Length: 309
Image 1 (cartoon, one colour):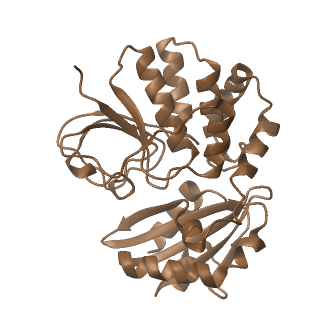
Image 2 (cartoon, rainbow, N blue to C red):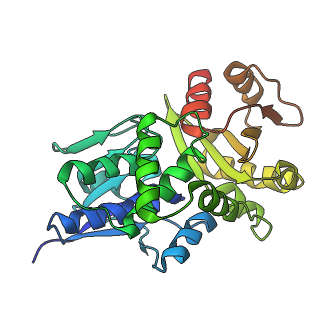
C-alpha cells in the first residue's frame, strides 16, 4: 500500500490555498497517483466556504501538525513560518508556489515550481494543459475562484497575462460570468460583523522574519473600511497580545477595500512609524495610514515593509 502524501497550503488558509490543494489532488488522480490527500492548516474563511457551497463539496480535513518523515506537497507557500508545525522534519516532495522564496531548505532534492503569477492555481491550470488532461467543471470553478480571489477580479498589481488567459478559459468551462460570480464570491468574504477582533486579526495573517526580526502582516477584505476601523481599539489590543506572545518586531493589519482598490493599515511596534514611513512615505496617525491603490500583500506590502525593517 502506498504511503499517504499530504497536500496543503499555508496557515490561515485563503481561497487559493484551499482550492489549489483540492485541485492538486484531482490532478494527481488524473495522473494515476492515488496516494495524495488535500488537507488544511486552519479554518475555512467565508469566501472559500461560498465556493465549497457552490460546488456542494466538503473542505479538506484539518491537521495541526505533520509527523517526522511525513511526505508532503506544499502549495501556495514555501516559508516554514507559514507552514505546518513539524514541517522541518517532514519530507517535502514538491512545492508549487507563486511567492518569494523565504526560509526554505530541504535535506533532499525535490520538485520545485515557482512562477511570479497572481495565483498558484494559474500554475496548476498550465500543468493540466501541459499534461493533456481535460479540465472538468469542478476543477475549473476551483481554479477560477482562486484566480478571482488572489487577483481581486484581475485588478491587483499581481495579475499577469497568464492569469487573465487562464481565467477566461476556466470561466468558459465553468459556465460562469466572471464579474457576477466573482463579485458575489468576494463580497461573501467581507461579511465581518460576526467575527471577534481576535478572529479578524488572525483571519489572514502571515508570519515573516528578517535577520532574526519577526513581523506579521495580516489582511482583511471589506467593502467598508470604516466599519472595521470602528473596532480599532479592540483590534490593537489583540495585535499587542500577538506581538508580546510571539516576540514580534512589527505587526500590520491591512484593511483592504476590494471595490475601490485601497487599503488602510494599522501598524504597531516600537519602530512602526519609521518603518511605515520608509516603506510608503506615509506618516502614521493614530497608528494608521491610508495607502491609496495598495491592495496586494505579496507585491506591495511585504516587499516595501521587508526592505524598511
